[in-house]
Image (cartoon, rainbow over all chains, first blue to last red; front, side):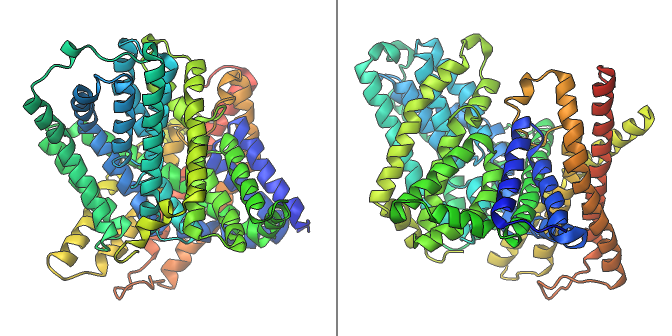
Length: 447
Length: 169
C-alpha cells in the first residue's frame, strides 16, 4: 500500500480514465480496471476488491435502476410499433406548407419521441430514417436538416421518461420522479427555442427550407384531423399514463416503466406490428443495453467509492471552490468542466463518476439540488452534439441513408446554432429558476 | 485452442439467448405487483424481491454476452482510425492492466461470497418474505465467470492478431 496525496490520487484516477477512454477501450473496463488497480495500491487487495464487489451488488439490486430496462423495453417496443412513421406523416400534412415546416415537424416529432424512448440513439436514428430523407428530397439545406435531426433527437435524453434521469437520481440522491418533472419544462423550452430558430431562419432564407407544394400535402381537413388524432392519441395516452401515475404519486418510476413496457407491447399488438421477430429483437436489445448501462454503473459506483475514500472528492471540491468569481464564478467552472468532460467521456461515465463528485459542490454553494441537477442535465445535451465525441452525430451518420450525401461537416455546421440555443436556455433557467422548480413543486406525492 | 474459444463463445451465446427472456419477466412481475396492489388491494412481498433478483440476473448474465458481441460502450472515434494491429495492441495492453484484474478480483470475491451465503443461509432483509440470497449471489458469480471467460477468449484473439498480424477466426 502506498500513500498519495488526495490531489495526486484524483489526477491519476481521472487522468487514466480519460486516456483509456480516448484510446478506445470499453468504458466499463477502463473504469473497473482503474478502480481495482488504484484501490489495491491505496488500500490493499482485500478492501479494494470488497468495495468493487459490494458496490457492484448494490447497483445490480437497485430497485430504482430497475426502471432502466423498463424504459428501454418500452421505448424499443414503441419504436417497433411504427408510431413514429405514422406521426411524421400526419404532422407533415399540417406543417409541411410552412417555410421550414418539415424541420419544425422534425423537432416536434423529436419532442414527442423523446417522451416515448428515453435513449438518445433510438430517437436520433428514428428521425434520421423517417424525417431526414423527407427534408433532403424536398431541397432542404443539408446542414439545417441534419441539425434539426440531431437537436430534436437529443431531446430524447432529457424529456421524461429518460434513462439519464433514472440514473441521475440515485447518484445524486434525488427522487427520480422529481427529476422527471423538473426536466419537463426545460425540455419544452429547448424544443420551443429550436422551433423558433427554424422558423426565423427559414423565413429569412426561404431557399434553405422550401415549403412543400400544396398538391403534395392536399388532404381533406377531416382526414387530416382524424389521422393526426389516431396517430398521436395511443402513444400520447401511454406516455401521459406513465408520467401521470408518477406525478400523482400512484406509481414509482420503476412501476411506471414496467407497466409502460407491457402497455407498449399491447399497443404493438393493436397496431399489428408485433411478431416473434420483433419481440425477440426488443428483448435482446433490452438485455444488451441494460447490461451495458449496468456494468458502467457498477464500475462507476465502485470507482467513486475508492475515489472518495482516498480523498479525491475533497481534493476536487477544493480545486473547484478555489475558482474566482464567487458563487457564480464557481458554478461557471463546474458547468464548463461538465461541458469539457462531455467531449471525452460517455454520458454514462459522467453520470456515474462525475455527478457523485460534483453534487456536494452544489450543496456547498447553496444551490437547490434539483435546479443544480437539471442545469447539469441540460448542459449535457451539448455534449451529445459537440464534436469530436458527439453521440447524436454518430447515430445520425450511422442511420442516415448514404445516398442523401450528408457529411460530418454538414452535421457539425447544422448543430452549432442548437448548441448556442442550449446555452441560451441555460441562461434563461438561471434567470428564471421556476422553469425547473415549478412543476416538481406541484407533484402530489413525490417518490 | 480453437475448440476452447468456440466453446466459450457458444456458452455466452446460449446464456444471452436464454437470459434475455428475464427482461419481459421483470416487466410482468412489476405489472403483476402493481395490478395486485391497486386492483386487488393485496400487495405481496414476494414479487418485489423476485423482480430485483430477475433484474440482477438479467444484467450480470448479459455482461459476458455483450462482450462476446463486442458491444460494451467504447468511445471509438479515434480507435476506428487505427490500423487493426494497433487496435489489437491497445486491447491486449488494456486487458492485461485493467480488464483481467477487474474480472479476476470480482471472481475472487463473488465466488467465495456465494458459497458463504449458502453456508450461512444469508437472507434478504428487505421484506417479510426473507428469501435466501445464495441463488442470486451464485448467478452473479456465474455472470462474473462468464465475463472473465469471454475476456480471456477475446484476449487470445487480440494477442494472435497482434503477433501474427492476421485475424484468428
